[in-house]
Length: 226
Image 1 (cartoon, rainbow, N blue to C red):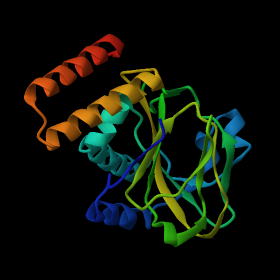
Image 2 (cartoon, helix red, strand yellow):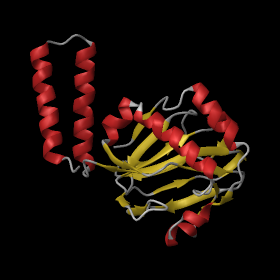
Image 3 (cartoon, rainbow, N blue to C red):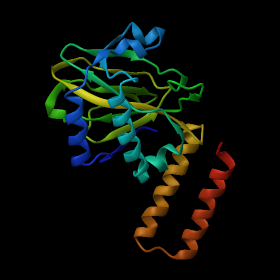
């Protein structure tokens, strides 16, 4: 499932993040790349050990917890602490696939990456190029969202960031280990939950909603790994 989630950050939250990011010391982004990715990665990244990086990461996590769409789509078991990157003119990230397993810095804990996410922090008019291109069986999808919007997609997808030709592209990115490992199962649950919410908003009969809700939770019970 490739999903756009609008408004994960509101205007005030976004302004606060950008104000802080204007004062940070960026580092070479290849420091956190795997062997294959390092050869095609040319960007800047806020070091994970930076106290400000941890503070901003906590803010993004809090915003994700308040997003019903993110919770419904990702069914998160573990979320990797969000990281922050910067692409200036001439920078890009060639085609790559994200590592299947990542270790949380400073811990012995490892998580499987089922989903990848990019939270756009720069307005699309602030830079040229810099599209996130995600490939699946339907072809290549070019993603360039409004500031504060997030794209969620399977971590096993081949993807790249096109060269930035003007301005600066700022984003947060992270990975999710879902309670439901299979993407098709997660998609079915998300669509069912979306339908239940829509029917509820439209005043559907309680008996039908109760049956659908039972189906949702029994499917989740069958597939969830918690």
